[in-house]
Image (cartoon, rainbow, N blue to C red; front, side, top):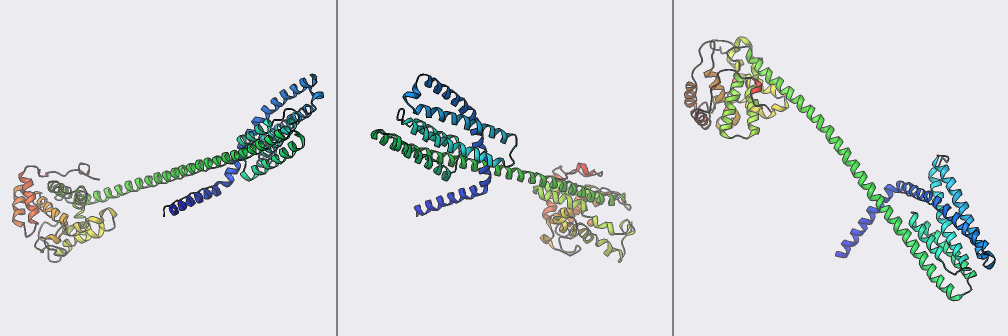
Length: 449
Ligand SMILES: [Fe+2]
């Protein structure tokens, strides 16, 4: 079970790596070719300088008679000339690549690095063959094989071919020129080990580089995605802010409209604001949550907005309303609900507006709801509405005292009003925390969110 889990997990990691490799295949190729080219370019100058020094020592050796005593030194001199000429040629070619002389730069990047790898492994093998005629060692082959593995990132298959061909040159060459069997056997073993180690090193470094590149690219992609998400979020946030501002403006417009409606009649001026204040004070006393307090405030300001459709002759009539006029006046809660149903922010308070004239005993309007069937906030507004109506001046009478309003509430508890809420209102009044509102307040003084 555990083995199966491990196997699946390893397969999953392998698949992820292959998928990532496929996604970035072209980018990895371009980057590795560019790195190889840059490294080769840097080494050209170093190798030109080194070959000049070697040629100089070769010439000194010639003067000392080495070339006559050991002819292999002459070959060594020629090989150094070849190195100098090849490195100089590649350096010039790389300059042409730098100044954009070639259209397909990638091809030359690849050509230069591959040529460099082939040249040095083959040259190392050839030099070590020649060295068999001098001191019998294979140091140069060891050095060039490892140097190519470290300097260049080559695909494992291609590096295998290069190392294999150089190994053939090395084996065939030393077999032909090395006469001492013991030295030959030692070089066979060491050369084989070295070429295998160099190839494995090349594969390992290539693999690490590719993984590192994928990791870097994955992080970069995730960072870009994150930045893009952030940008979208911030755009959405700005739009939300604009919408909220527009919503605020539309709310304020409606609230202003509701209060402007009352200003037509000096006797009802500031009524909805005072109803809102009484309602909020009772709500705070009852410990209602913030959200309910907000809705209560909105509903109190808008509770009589439906009067906008009632003719002034009925609205401002000083005497009793006729049988024809009463139904028109009683339609204002439903009118208010219809007006506010178009406003998103007022959706939750529609029942409060509709039912603010319901009575606890079921004799109210428009639907004759009884007791707790009347929305809680509508029952609060019903109390505040009555208190303000009694304590405000009317065209046909002077304002009455707050105590009169309290007496009316107590009289109507259980019939017109919710008795529990009346009780709370009376307690609030007796505590001295409820201040009668004599004058109309402004919108700014009220708590708007
Ligand atoms: Fe009303």
